Length: 122
Image (spheres, rainbow, N blue to C red):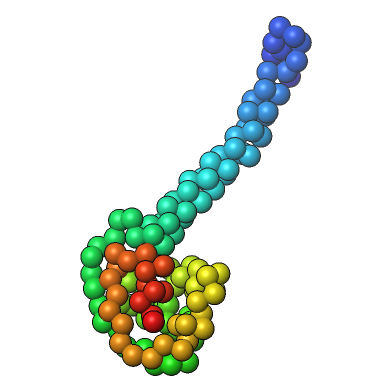
């Protein structure tokens, strides 16, 4: 079998293997970057209400409702899109006791940021 060699005397097939190896590492990184970018934009939009419809809803909560249940209710009403991210945000801000103690009706809008939603539970 005769192999073609380039000017430097190395196999031409070696360059093709190198390109395939680099592509096998770079292509997944590109897809991962697009996925993480899209996820970040979606979370930021939900958290800060950059582009959300102005739908409002009155929701009644009872005291001692678990935080994730509150978040799921908000998701079902169309106020938030990511209940897990909302729960993490509430815990990070130290507002979980406020939401757990809250009992009554609250009027919320999908155009509210997470900070405004938490402030409504007073």
